[in-house]
Length: 606
Ligand code: FAD
Image (cartoon, rainbow, N blue to C red):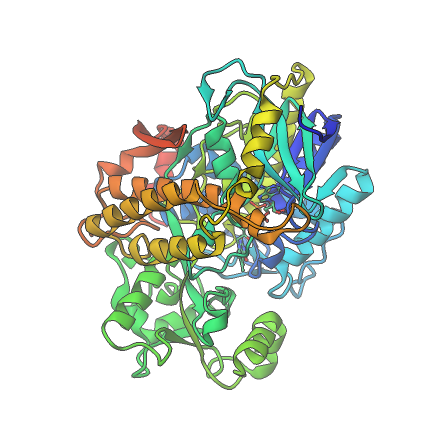
């Protein structure tokens, strides 16, 4: 019998970003005994890195804004592949969730009238992002964290979950039986000791998968753990092919390549130029957005002051469009010296304005690249940023397809369709974090957790396996090969040959990963931690590559050289992925049908 520490709760939340903390607050307030577990320190997570803001149609800056316009923008940004019900709930409930943050102590920037200030972002018709300079995520996390601590919710930090536990009433897979959720198994990062949580409801809020790619804005935490945990427990995932390559990551110096340059730079007036000084985005306006986008500089510049009578600048097209445009300019030989484009706010706004609105960007470039963004342009290029695909959930409750399992935030799929609009993640976290927490607490009222006998031993054996092999594969080398494969073969522009080659390589890496070995003992051992994370990255990467090869069209965060057009037939279905004993399967599933009253929103001239 495995020696371990055991705890019992009604609701266990895995992940302490915005989604996890909001879920924990909701579950606690519904009366559930709740705990949060996170693999880094409390207060880290990706949410803290969010810069630009939280999208919510509060109408503070533009009174014409309302949930219907936000809903329409979100669906159009996602190229209509979003789960309409999630997009509706999100647009309707985001304002209340932002005001709630304010009630809990968040200090947002203000308008002249003292309302919460809202800024422009790509794809949003009106200035809609509530913000705190370019450090919005920090304020969000500070506020939620303070509330979690004040409510006395138990937090287990620097503790990594490696397996979801079930009651063993389902089919056999991965050496144990699946079934209803009964808890989770993990290890303390510092001591390597094992820990098990017994809980009838588990909320996954583990974020994304970016660490499978070489150039990424994501940190070490984004190894797709939640996606993989859900799949191995028998849950389905959807549309894993849709990866957002943010158009503006740093490209110089090489050591910081991929670090995000917030979209707020463009929202606040920044423009993109090629090496010849040409403002090139006017050459890349797709038909789908022509009616809403200015086709000349004068109109684009007037838009910042007068949104009613002018169309938006092409720099504020959705992210997929801008990323593809930069990629095309670089490929055509018109890129900057480090292989990107120039992002110029220095010639457009005063140094005082730039330092006030974009303090983090000012310091980031000064310290990391020795560039003063109030005087010189930045060099930027696409970086892997966000995954739109994720755990398939029921929209109102965030319930996954395994009883007792819930997913919210970046780990969940459906909300953003094929492309997420900036600012829509932070609002997604608090809208669906709350819904997941409420539903998980409700489920726990009528269910108890019963961990099947074999589960803990199987989980422990699986975790220590890399110590039991000598002279095997090195996790760091394997990780590097994986990142190179995904970046070059399943990156921003894809085709069948390259993706087939990627899948072949992934099979090879998977086989080699069975022979990963690490030295030393279980006390703070980063090589061991990476060996465990790699299993998850490999599974997520295979799902991404398989779904990407299957979807024979280009749409949002999935661009194919061999199928460059958006295909209406593919616009009617999702790709649903599942896993059993290391084999990934996929099927097509029709999109839920949007009701007529919402359909009408897309017919009205706006
Ligand atoms: P996270 O905040 O990443 O939290 C994940 C949590 O899960 C962490 O606590 C982690 O430790 C934990 N975890 C993961 N695996 C395990 C495991 N196995 N065991 C235990 N714990 C685990 N979005 C916007 O809307 N507006 C913005 O302005 C914006 N700016 C961004 C800037 C940057 C640089 C980045 C990287 C992203 C930005 N985004 C923005 C996107 C947004 O920040 C993320 O999508 C969002 O914060 C994800 O939140 P989450 O709660 O789902 O996950």
